[in-house]
Image (cartoon, rainbow, N blue to C red):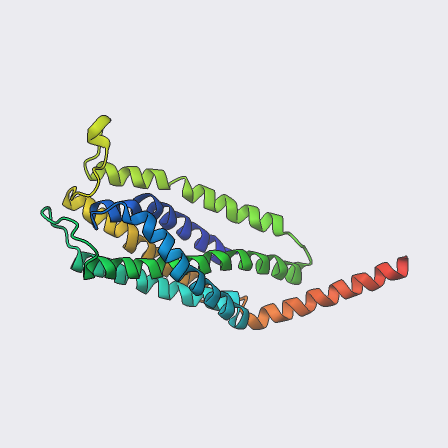
Amino acid sequence: MRSLIAVTASDALDVGVRANLAIYLFANIIMQRSLSATFEIVSGVLLGAPILLIGIYFASKKGSAVVYSKISIIQTLLALSGFFICIFFLPADPTREYSGLTFGVLATLLIFGIYMSTLGISSNLVNAMTGDLADYEFYQSGKFIPGTIGATLTFCNKIVSSCVGLVVTGIMLFCGFKGSGEVAVVPENVFVNYRFYYCVAVSVFILPAIGHFITYIAMRKYPLDAKTMNEVSLYIAEKRGVLRKEKAKED
């Protein structure tokens, strides 16, 4: 349970911050905000679906916890790679303008697209592991409490998600967007300032990398591997069979 709470908390924070600031990757680093919609469609169709199917296949063979741990390391490396590719090929430069789909733009979008596509695997595996945890609790204590487990994880998610606004607001204030009116609006397709550039890059790539690494540490010794869950499944099947027999006798 503690492992899933740590996973839920780290995911809620980095996902929320990245979701709020990812648009500025297109508008103020790539310098072409309109690419955002095209990127989401193309990456979702060409990368998202195949990668999700591959993840589901391996999860069915190796177990949800094993695949989740492995995918967390892959996500950490992808996010870190995205950061260094971005700052190397699309460096902070007040004079830089969008000049089409250059190698730097394509490389950044490709690594970001692959990274975003892997998130579909981890989000689905969390749901599966929540069910596994409920079955394991029944196996250990005889109490079937999926509602309590789900409510606990949801509560943790809501608590951490409530901090996302504070983090994003702090970033924007740090970058000089204060007050109201035009001074509080982020201009599109232009370089803003060095602080904003690096804050966006860190929020989109480094913060998620830290979150995924925390997830890997939390899941490294997660006890519900494929062998354990097989024992749990057999136990639950046996219990259900016994209950059916007892009910049949009563009838």
